[in-house]
Amino acid sequence: MLSRTHGDGVKIIRTVPEGELNAGCCACCRAPEECPSLSFFPCCDLPSYILNGLAASRYIYIRENSLEWNDPKIRRAGGMCCGSACCALEIEDDVSVIYFDDSTFNDVRNDTRCMNEFLTFVVGGRGEKVLIENRFGFGMFHRGRSACCCVPVFFPATCFPCARKHVLFVDNAETAVKTIIGARNDAKARMQIDRE
Image (cartoon, rainbow, N blue to C red):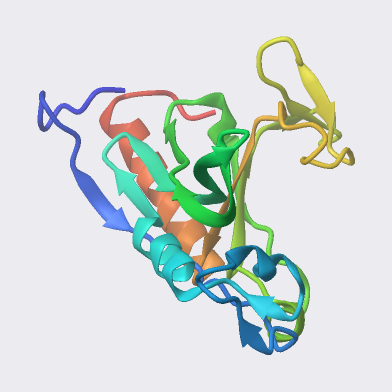
């Protein structure tokens, strides 16, 4: 889907506020900047420079023809030990774009866990969860990518990353779902694409 308003660019219609990264009450201290790997222990939170980098890189844009977001990851920094540093971490961008005419965009829903506020306080969290997916077979299968044509919904996503579903962590999932669906329907009507 190309923009009909601007031939050389695509306008950002709205931004969706991202969910806040929270370590929970179990994290009683922050890992020192000299040894950020200590943050992998449950009692230590990430160092300030990592938290600031994550917050600065995250965004969710609703464009004229697509949804774009950056969900940055933490990785080991480059160094002398097999190509990576032993004690330094860095931020790696992970930008995703879904066009509104993509078949993945059939189902956009609030998939926030039960008692999210309580669980975020205790064990941490990233905000409320919005799930974008396309199921078939009475809702039992996800469409897959490339060679993996389908994945049963009860298989964990970490073991089967080929399932075509996308997760966004937002501040308010209900508002985000309504905004995304409204933008998708407006774009399909504007581009004269039949709704499925």
